[in-house]
Length: 120
Image (cartoon, rainbow, N blue to C red; front, side, top):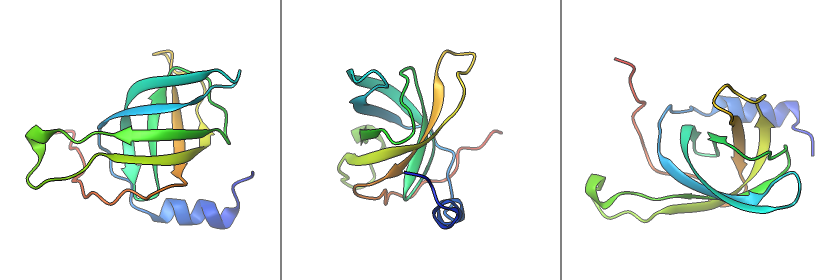
């Protein structure tokens, strides 16, 4: 399914937060093999995420995303976040051997608030 200009504009209108959270993704790669991979987010917004993967997952691939919240960093009780997503873009292979994958959430949206990680 092609990403329309309207959908792309809406996605870009949402504020992306550069934050590295541990996450586990599950799905099927380009050869149809089921996989589960531990990774971390590069950035998040309410409707999607970007992260590195070692598997070849083409655009249109449906995946499950799980982000655990550490009890050590909780100020109030929170539950882990689990949702489904669809891959909307994939970078060329990077020097690290992975690819940066952008996913649009098709299940529950992300509602946790973060401050961007600073580079200072």
